[in-house]
Every structure is written in C-alpha cells, then in structure tokens.
Image (tube, rainbow, N blue to C red; front, side):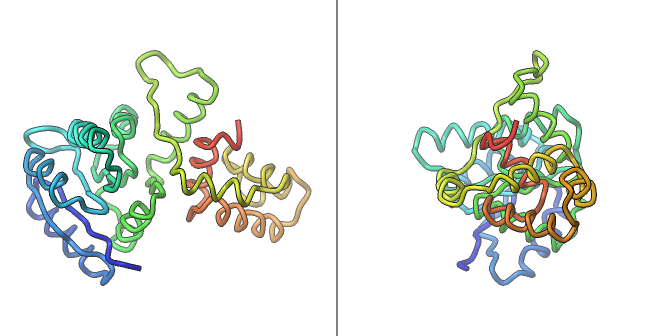
Length: 237
C-alpha cells in the first residue's frame, strides 16, 4: 500500500516524540507534520491534507473536539473529506467520547495504546474504517443502540457519522446470509462465540466461520467494529 501520511497534533513534547517514534517504525507511514496547538494544527490540516490526523483533546488553546468540528466545517465547505481524524487522549468519559464522535472524529484511542495497535489504528482509520479502543467501545455501542431505538436522553443524543459510500456498496454487493445476520445480532448483543453457539445450536467452529465471513463482508477487523458498522448501516436493530 502507499504511504499513509500522518499529521500529529499534540502539545506535550514527550508524547509527541513518542507518537512520532512509534509511527515512524512502520515503513508505510510517513509523518508529514506536527503541531503543538490547535491553531497551528488547523492550518496544517488545511494545507498538508494528510490521510490521518492524530488529535489530542487537551490542547492548550482549543480542545481537540472543537478543532475537529472546525476542520470538518472547513472540509464541508471545500467538498473535501480526504483527511480522517483519530482522537488520541487519556479521557474516556462518556461525554468526552460522544462529543468527539459528534464533532466528526473517525476513530478514538487511549494514549496508553500499544505501539503495534497504534499503527493498526492509523492504517485502519486511513482505510475508512473506525478504530474504536476497547476501553470506550461499550460507550459507542450503547449510544448507537439508543440512536436506533430513539431513546437517547435529552442532551446526550448525538449523530454518529454513517458508513462510507464505497463500503455501503460492498455490503450491498455481498449481503449477509440469514445465519450470518443471526450471528451478527448476537455479536451486537455482546455474546461470545460459545454463547452464540449455544443460542443457535451450532458448533463453536461453525460460529467462528460465520464470524470470519461477517468481518470480511463488512470490511472490518474485529467484532467491535462489526457491531458498530452493523448498527450504523441498519443491519440489526
């Protein structure tokens, strides 16, 4: 694959150096710029047009959520949706997570993420698939379920962006089988393979085969991403 161009927006020097070192360890990632504050970061986002921008929420002049919101507004005005936003922070509160996605973040990772997973997160985000840290996955899934049910509390409801048009076409072209839909519904419900096997009277091996098929058809890397995509695409209720 071609190099993934990354812009790092982080105010702490040591953290920024660590991110740079971790990402540069992968030969398919190119660091095209760095910024220590939101003002500089917004300018670089507009001029460099990276594939992915890692944005810290706790920037000194403007929080990362507001920066993301301003950049998405700029993109909308210029009909440019190239750059993906990976929110990288130590904050895992529900309000912070939902605000980040409401502002237009594509992915959300905790700063204590392993270097190997950070690289995966960047590449996954660049390919148009959300990377959702396991620490905050439950928050996102709960919100998506509430949106589907129309039962979000006042003041908590946010619109989380839908799926990429190209991925939507793939899902239409390669639809899930009825059995795969049944397995997917149980994945969304939080069941593991053994529980799914018991509920559907299948072997665990058969369930694993169905799960692999689901991940492939939905163009995702893991079960959490499959659940999020299924809810976003309206494949399950």
